[in-house]
Length: 99
Image 1 (cartoon, rainbow, N blue to C red):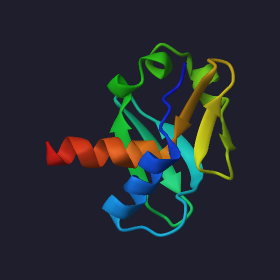
Image 2: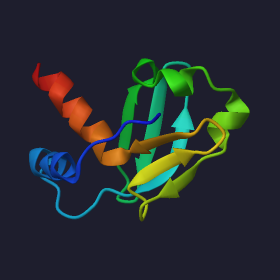
Image 3: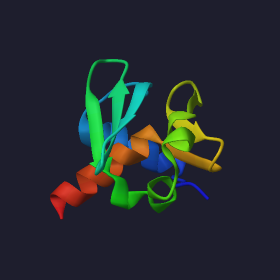
């Protein structure tokens, strides 16, 4: 089962990061340690693959089969039945850096 955050938490992400509007993905990349999401505005979000055990256990073929959902604000990996909110990645990054 994928990560799930309520709409209120997604809005909190926008307020914390100073963004207006939604954060939309453009491309997904992986390396040995990180998940990288390229955003439509040119920024790149990188988070540890350790945060996503379902994706860590997936094959390269499964990881490369993704699609953007919810108007580009989320990612789905249908082969692993996993969904990820891009905005939740920003929230987790902000919470970890504040801690």
